[in-house]
Amino acid sequence: ENDFDVDICVVGGGFTGISSALYLAKNGYSVALFEARELGWGASGRNGGQLSFGLRREQNYIEKLLGMNHAKELWNLGLEAVKDVKDYISTYKIDCGIQQGVVHAGYYKRDYINFHNEIEHLQKYYDFNNFKYFDEREIQEQINSKKYYSGLLNKSAYHLNPLKLLYGLVRELVNLKVMIFENSPVEKIEENHGGVNIITKHNKINAKFAVVGCNGYLDNLLGKVRNKYMPINNYIIATEPIGEENARKFIRNNYAVSDTRFIIDYYRFSEDWRMLFGGGETFTSNFLRDAKYFVSKRMYKVFPDLKKYKIDFSWGGTLAITINRLPNFGTLMNDKVLYAQGYSGHGLALSTLAGKLIAEKISGTSNRFNFFQSISHFTIPGGNLLRRPIYASAVAYYKFRDLY
Image 1 (tube, rainbow, N blue to C red):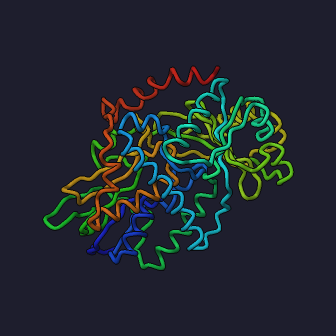
Image 2: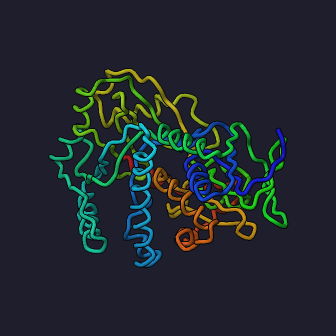
Image 3: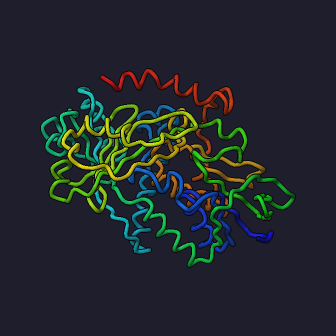
């Protein structure tokens, strides 16, 4: 109800904002966090729960784009991101159902070539030996579907309940006396002589720095920065609980799974043994009213036997996808406003890492934040009016390819 001063104002109550607030508060800054709706309302609370290192693109691509030294720095940060989340869970005793193992399922016959190349490349240049390859017989033993020809198990990746993880971190923010304001959208950020003013409908907050972690829900807050990514809508359904015995008939070792198509299917079992199946995208600003039919068509192609079980829930959310699929970090207003976004569907670990690197930069250590900030991003032409149809047209070929 009142205007006030604070060291840091964080905008966005997802993993980027909450992680930023956590590290900054632990470093002794006074922090206020503003969320337009409820904490975890966006992608942080609705995602598929796969916790994996690395970026959305393969390491070979990153090496060619940025050079080997830069690629290795990003690789090490990706490993650190997963370790940090696991440490959070242990340190703060967060009950979020974490399970080991994520399988990349080969939808195309020739995927085995890419899998073998990836195993060899990461062993040779990164000393990484935690993959296990599945041939056609083995992948169909692990995942009871005729859709896959090969698979790659990442034993250093995990899956979990993301909203429970987020709430566990929020409890620590409360312990650190971070001021949290839900249902409090920020309308504008303005630079002043000593920092920034954060403007809401009823209040003005004066801060030394602002952190913006809104991802696909950024809207106009940072102006043309939003043209660096495309907001897309993705959908998930949840079956009724089918019990552990039945669940293991579909996924023997309770791994999480994503396939190799451009528009992927991704799925796992929840703690109460519901199949959580995600897939399909829409590019308009409107969500499907009921995603059950839209997603279940994809699920039944993979697992026809799931037709016998009722679908209890469906939901959708907005992702921020950059053209090169790499995250977009940056600053505005003479480094007084810091942002991180564009995780491209790979944000559970990256967004928590982003908060750590943002806190480092505000505290005077910029080099690790700069590893991401220095990545060049293409600006989608046409502004907000045209970027959705332009992007939808650009992926039409890949959607067609996915059918075969």
